[in-house]
Amino acid sequence: MRKIRKAVFPIGGLGTRFLPATKSMPKEMLTVVDRPLIQYAVDEAREAGIEQFIFVTSRGKSLIDDHFDHAFELEETMTRRGKSLSILDSTRSSPGDITIVRQQEPLGLGHAVWCARRIVGDEPFAVLLPDDLMVGRPGCLKQMVDAYAELGGNLICAEEVAPEDTSKYGIITPGESLGSITEVLGLVEKPAPEAAPSNLGVIGRYILQPEVMDILASQEEGAGGEIQLTDALAQLIGQQRFHGVTFSGRRYDCGDKSGFITATLALALERPELAPAIRAFMATA
Ligand code: UTP
Image 1 (cartoon, protein in one colour):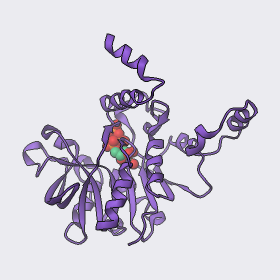
Image 2 (cartoon, rainbow, N blue to C red; image 1 turned 180 degrees about the vertical axis):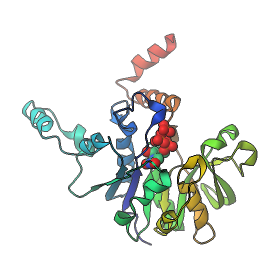
Image 3 (cartoon, rainbow, N blue to C red; image 1 turned 180 degrees about the horizontal axis):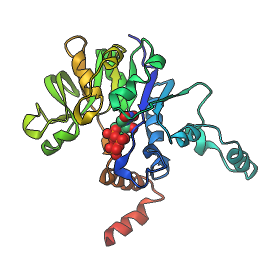
Image 4 (cartoon, helix red, strand yellow; image 1 turned 30 degrees about the horizontal axis):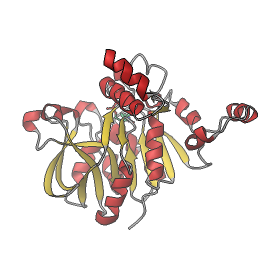
């Protein structure tokens, strides 16, 4: 079985739910405690053994490229002042590790993944949506890579969502289930609660076979007028192995304001230097 070496980060979206903050700043640079969302996702991917990071970006996202570049003046000044550079370690990518691909128009998540087809080539790959901040040990993608070593095929991260929230997610028609693994028999993008086949939702982590790119090439617009990744994946079911992996850990939906604020509080409370002040404030709130 081929190792998962490449990960696609579709970050071409407009982030309208965070306006005006995201008018000129990419949503993925919103900061939870002291790291932007994109960095959590990149760190998670690196832990899972990813060697090539493919950012599918759009206009106005160049701050993200800079975040993973060397910052000569900053680093020189810090060194001169005797400050350690280790805090910057995971942001200083090696030459060739990061590839930037432009999505010229925000035509949807499926289209963003397809924009990376030439860099992905003919090998299985991971997809990470940085909006979903996954906190777990090991990290979410590492758990999925371990499951992939057993199962192969296509894997999606699955999570039970509130029945009234099915219209916000791709929803799985589940087959046999064993421990954290569920066979996927069908997928529907954003069904109304009464039409949903289950309340097992697709979360922003995937391990996919390269054939999905061929399906995406001719994919029509789906829900919301966008080219949906879920619709393309649904076509692979029956042709290739397909499973959902329930992640052991916590997910914060940082594409949404309340999820983002919850993530900030939860991660701050895990920091011994911050927790007492935050607990004291919350006790009075
Ligand atoms: P969202 O549905 O959260 O859309 O996309 P969005 O534009 O980022 O945010 P809102 O809803 O307007 O606030 C889910 C993921 O798919 C990417 C986004 O960047 C995000 O990581 N995406 C979406 C693209 O890369 N391109 C697109 O055309 C659409």
